[in-house]
Image (tube, rainbow, N blue to C red; front, side):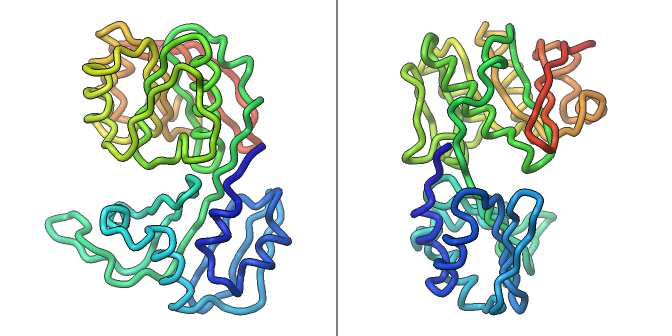
Length: 275
């Protein structure tokens, strides 16, 4: 297991670093910061709370350090998240400003959920041998991104794999990459698929978190080009996935051959897709 732990500590307020380092270095999964409440450390099945409540200054420090004061990085806040150095994802909540049904800015950020990016190079060895197009499904926090990273890296030892890493979470700096791997970072998924198909001639295309119809259309196009697909989607089961309207065309056209279904304990099993 590897983790960009120093990068995580660097974005935390100095007064929190020692205790977070002592308690969570090997098993911290989430760090939740809420103004006026004590920091919450999610350590597997155990939750620990530090003594001093979080302040407005603490939240501002994390946002500024994670974005490196970059307007481009801070712009993703309107989508409800920020990707910190090392691939750690910061979920953001507070008071949003909306226009015509879209968030234009966050007037006040009061709550942060920092999800710790960890790499498990030996995970998913058997899944890498599954044939056809693979879709990894599971609820948030069950390990979809981690398993996709492992499968992409293993397959890239023998085949050319192009990765659309929109948020820089699949292969952040310091994480091992596959030998025959090309990575496009910071580009929306649908556009990224189009670019990689046109420019990089991949044998395999990897995409994290299909969430919109545009993503599905791009993958349908890639499948029609004969490219093998690896992707993830939010769903708790095969039935849950098949019931969601956004995925209807992928199901109707039988784009994916196999579902890799994750469970909360990060075990998984494979199921053949049925029409």
